[in-house]
Length: 49
Image (cartoon, rainbow, N blue to C red; front, side, top):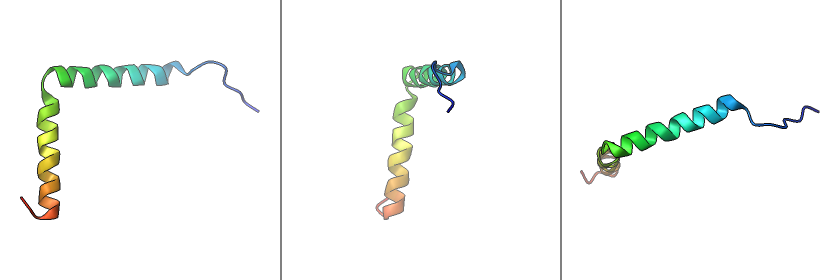
């Protein structure tokens, strides 16, 4: 059996980079825009919008 005893540094770096990009997007106010677009798409799918 191949037992991994330490975490893969590439996975940790990718996770840290993803979190940093999310934080930057939230800081810039992009979360509001994305949420509004998602709501509009949902409303179009159910036929209200």
